[in-house]
Image (cartoon, rainbow, N blue to C red; front, side):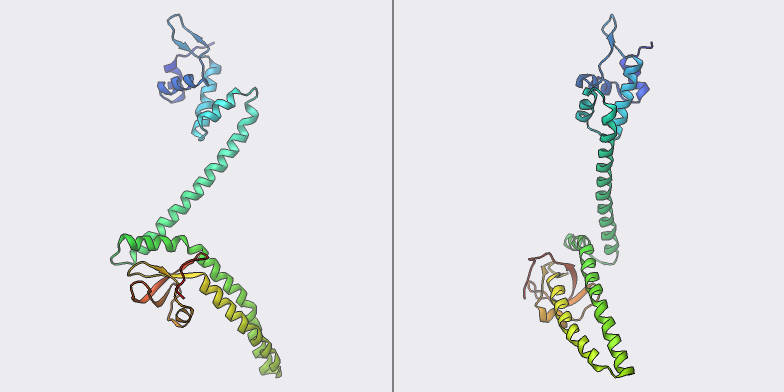
Length: 245
């Protein structure tokens, strides 16, 4: 049977001699015998074990888990479970990193539209990007709840014109008015605005917000902190956020 020195095992497994020595110190790769000169010698089985250790380490498993694994009588049955758990961990980390990458790319896109920017403006953009999904979800909720109301509106108008059924339009009005009030309050409670001058995140009075000129992303408001009046960036507001109304 072939015998390998520490250096030979390290070379065959593509690791450093210090790594082999470290695994020896941790008790997960003990040499099968010592030479007369005291050199550590490893067998083919030891080499296979080292390759398994290297594989598990490359997969991201910690030393403690590998050590506990080899302490079991039947480590083969546990390896698949450990690998599944590690796969799930890596996928979660990948998802988190992708989310961070998307955030950075979004900030870079926004910065291209700004002629001059400061650290504060970068912070504003980051805040907008983080709240983007929540804001989008809120808007879709409003749109979806409005579809039946809009359908009832057009149906009542057509039937009033073609068949004289005016009472259906009255029913629509009785539904649309409470719906409009409810949606307006829901919208008001879930949005806030960032002042581009002082970077204050605030919620205006309901009346001011309701009648203000706006675009899909901004609304012309007066900042309660610095007094600037102009377009402010709309963001999603967590429950209990700033309220100046």
